Image 1 (cartoon, rainbow over the protein chains, first blue to last red):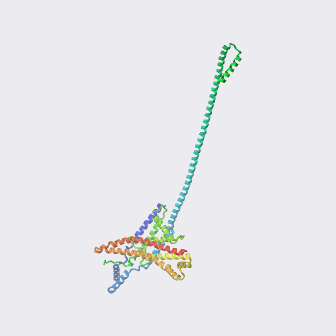
Image 2 (cartoon, rainbow over the protein chains, first blue to last red):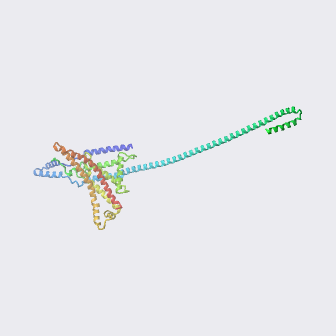
Image 3 (cartoon, each protein chain N blue to C red):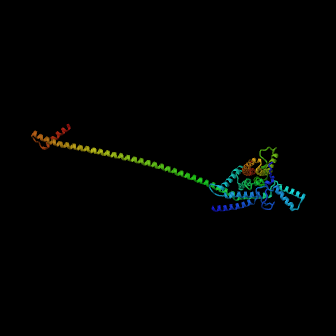
Length: 234
Length: 255
């Protein structure tokens, strides 16, 4: 790139030198021969030719007329046609060979590059949208999974709680039964103890009352039957 | 009254040679110098513009705008879809070469539009003439092209002989003439205008009372200088566009 610029700079400098030289050597932007200049030239020519008097006047008059009469502006000059044709054909040749194809090619390449870039961007965008969609899907799945796990945990907790409550209720019922049984056993024991005590008391009382002592077994049977009858009635 | 000396018409466009033998075919005068400038400037645009920046600037921008302008504003409307590789560079060459040879009308020191001389407009018009008629003959064949060119569709048979003569004269004889004169006369007229007002301004540069009128021609010189810049572009565009129109008409398969 830098070497191209250097070459371009040198070429521009050379061209500037050539053009500058041509400009300096070119005639100024004035008209062609003026009448005065023509007259002077004609007089000089006549003197060099050794003319005098009427001949000199006639010669000068003819020369000035010929000199000041500019060529017709609608008749083409051969040199201008040739140089013009040469210049145009060189320009056309250059543009056909190099100028136009290079610029057009660069423009087409850039258009193609921009089109490719746009397509790539579209493709990347579609891919990103697809990834985003997948991500959203995965996020929704994860949320569902989390909700499911929470629900399961909640259900498990409920089941554990229910189970624990049932177990505790069972234990309570068992404890109650045990307590009731204990109470009943204590009651039975107490009744038995009471009965024995009463029997002993009653035997003592009866011995004293009856003063007759039956055999022990008969006494006990008699007393038990009496107590049973008392217990049933109470 | 103002003692003005206006140079003969021929003198304001006729330049003496400064290189080469006087009167020889290779003689170089100011007009030839303008051709050389136009050649160099046109080539420079496309040499310096041959870059591949994604966002074009400077010469690249100018070159690409020109190519797009020729393709889209000149070829597409006149020729339509184009497959000829030589056509865009040819029209590009026409446009730039004419534009640069015109614009030297307003370039200081030079101040001469090369197209105010008839040689270049005539050459370009004749060259274009050969190209568009040649392409027409190639596209349609000799008889087919003559029929295509001089027989417009839908013309009553009774009118056909007259119309054919008119079409023939118009397309084969008048077209190159009008193509030449349109460019040449516009540039010559512009040059004469500028010379006229410049001579008038110089004549009024005096201590006499009528010097009060000096601002008028002086302003006219400035105004017409700007106007000539527009004319330079416009005439290059018109010449190229007309070539496109003539070429499109010659090679088209529609009437």
